[in-house]
Amino acid sequence: MLGTAHAIPSPEHENTHFALLGESGTVLIDCVGSPNVRLELAGIALDSITDLVATHFHPDHVGGIPLLLMTMWLSGRQKALRIFGLHHCLERLEDMMGFYHWENWPNFFPVAFHRLPEREHVLVLERDDYRLFSYPVRHLIPTIGLRIESQTGEGWVGYSCDTEPCPAVSRLAGGVQILFHESTGMGPGHSSAAQAGAAARQAEAGRLVLIHYPTHGVSLPQLVEEARAAYGGPVELAKDLLEVPLPPA
Image (cartoon, rainbow, N blue to C red; front, side, top):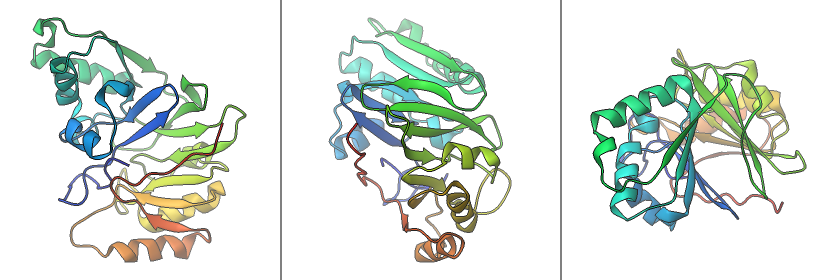
């Protein structure tokens, strides 16, 4: 977990984004802040990143992508990077990079944009050790949540991303060992900790980890208690640089 905060970070909590490390390289899920600094803290080599999934076009999820691309370029990267996301997001990412005139960066490495259809259980990536699927969720703009499965179809991880309570979260998290669910607070496009707990209960997830939570003016232990009131399984609060091992393939 490279970051755990909602839209307003703090010194202890960067905006929510994470890295999926596997045998075939590293996949970034969103990218914020000063990416290289956070990757170094996590011990992740910049050159190990093969793919990036952009969940939606809000600054606290994709604001670090231009700096990531520039850092890779200045570090001498030559191999291609693939970026996945919905058309709404990728169209705006390309426009944003256009403002930086990236077409004029000498010897820039290839970047391939892969537009995902806005439907459930779309295969984003398949690796020897896992498969990654996307699901549209209910936010203020088009947004995807994610499901990580073993090659045998076992549900390992569900990630709600930014969402109001919606049936898609129950499906993307159905039977997963761990559900990472946002807990920004009740309101349009977001969920409270109690609603995250209800989602984990409905999905029959084995464990709930609260993420994308407020870091100013709230009691973080209270968020956990609110989730526990709605869900009988283990609940914890995600922390920056938390490592979560996945089962062997």
